Image (cartoon, rainbow, N blue to C red; front, side, top):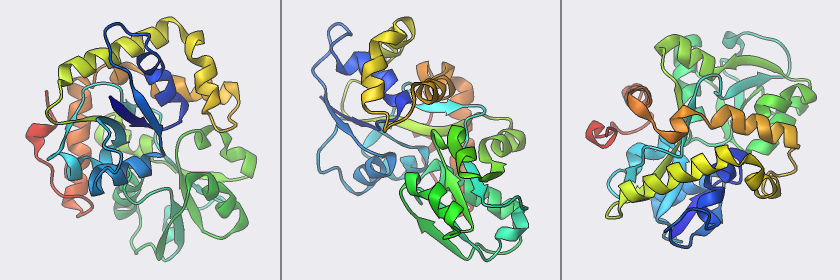
Length: 278
């Protein structure tokens, strides 16, 4: 079975046991490590590697529901774990009107949240959205190449090293505005597969990781892109939580709320809500 997920610590932690034959009665998994913007593109435009299971952004979900099923576990939702909008100097949202903002993808939950926040907080349009690899964004803000940068993942823990300032935590804004957790990454599987079986394997993999955290440590750090062990552990603690085991009613409600708001703004197509439920 072919599976694609990011090299980020939360994904390698969650899928370590499953892809290393530590869960009984599972097939062999052929793993592709790819940034979520890549897997979004594969899912939306056609997967050249024909993966059975993929990690994508919830922002990409409305585009892929004809071919893929949202799984109820393995993804990333939570509280206090949203993207950050960073600037070189302390400033206010209004100063971003007619400015340049760097984003890691224009098909990501982070970008979706940024657009929804900007519509609410900024009277004028953003002059230009610049898509660049997420590891280039903080240096670009620091150098003044862009006026602000939208960052994700471990940048939450390292942006102070660049002398940057947090303009807004979009997760906090979302939670205050909706009371819901923030939906970030989804696990999808091709339609026609045994989704309940795959979900069972993923839950067992999460349980194994939580019971034997040292087991996945070398694997996590091998793919952690020069991240320190402390930052990797903080990353896992932030993104692996009760929603990883099961989206639950609150998780599904949050996903529907996010995608319907985005659809109302014309950011994504309106999804079939029957596909985003148990």
